[in-house]
Length: 267
Image (tube, rainbow, N blue to C red):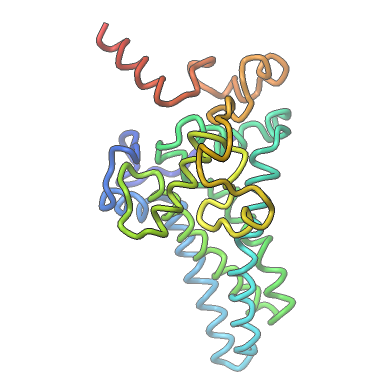
């Protein structure tokens, strides 16, 4: 069962698709999304408490700084592991307890990659994950102030990650070459073969662990790139995602779906 996000401002009225938006529209949407607002608030509060502890002499400046640095390097590892071994596993759809969450945070995004409303990670899954991954290490390095500093670092990275993830789905070529390459690799993950390029904004671990590929010439096209293996046959055994999906069964290829919708409208 997935929680309904609070819709304010930009998010209150209709669907938004990144392939029909520009960078200015994306930025306006980004800073009004409820999860991003929450991340910024958490970063300000946790970072403020950590800094106050350093100023009062209650925490080691080096320990607090080390907590942020460790969180910075730990973050890509955690998200690589989660993306590859959890979100792309074929276990979460098997239980009614996890099927709704998996559908919200990954199935919907792969079946409609440019839909901004399902691109952002869900707050109720992302924030606890960031806290669990960063705070224990920070606590070991600098106590409570270190834990808060590490959380602040992890949340700020999450904001950066989400913004660049959105940019990768915009219908334009970024000016910076490194962003263009990042976009190319992530688009291959979404539109060619999902079994690789898990890093999204940081592909260092993909290169080290053999899951990086440069483009279509390196891997065959995957028949499950849009449905992640959850098809009508699977739904007969594990129907939980299908029950939560309007108009099921439907064509999971977003390009073909648009053509079918246009044809139906014309007729």
